Length: 327
Image: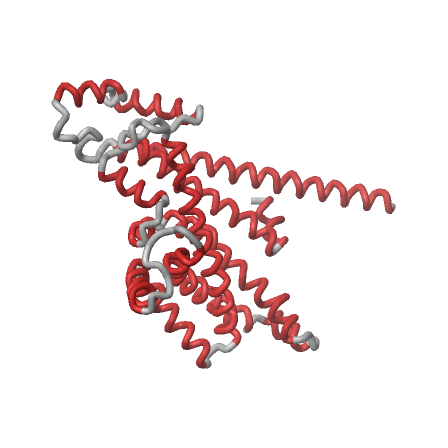
């Protein structure tokens, strides 16, 4: 009898493992399809941009035609698309028009770490402070702390990050002279741009976490846990916060990708040598390979963040892992 039960448990575990494996593979398949669609739409949209990459007034029409022929831009769009996809499959994003045909991959790998550093610092700072504010506001619903958080969240979500950047630059950089106004040469240079980006993250996460905490605190299982004599810390940490985090994780993934890829303006304001200024200039100059490469990098980060969120669901709540595997 015991042997039969053990065998049944083993089979159930194997079945769950197979379901979770299929679930992950299915998600990876969706990621690949989405990435392909993004590449295709970007390629077609890019060809609709006005002008050409060779708008130097010193170039004669004959020279421009020779350059188009050299880069294959005189071929039909379908042929250009097939060639680009074939090269991309072999890890070749092409050469940048505005940087002397230098490899797009090399340019991105050189600039992206700075943007990644800026984005991660902002998201970590914003997530930690936002979660703390949201939890405190939810536990003190209707009181001064709650109202203060709501006011801050309204301000943080309604005012763009570049406005905060300008205000911080003036007061802390020019007036107080506590931090450098621009640059990226050391820890002191990180404060102003990181805080400028993090304000919106703090506001959004705090507002979301506060709403979830208020809803969770009033659930029956919280009341039951309190009635059983569990300490307030245990009830709040083990039951309330854990369950309130599940919906919050939904926005953390896309928000992380959005901060990393959305720091274009901040990088230009603070003169940060990241990928932002490079991306903007590539659009202005119609640098097709650079536009494609940067967009693919951003899209890949965003799609990957969605995948990580799906995995985190299962880490926070095992029930989601099991049900997700059955999806």
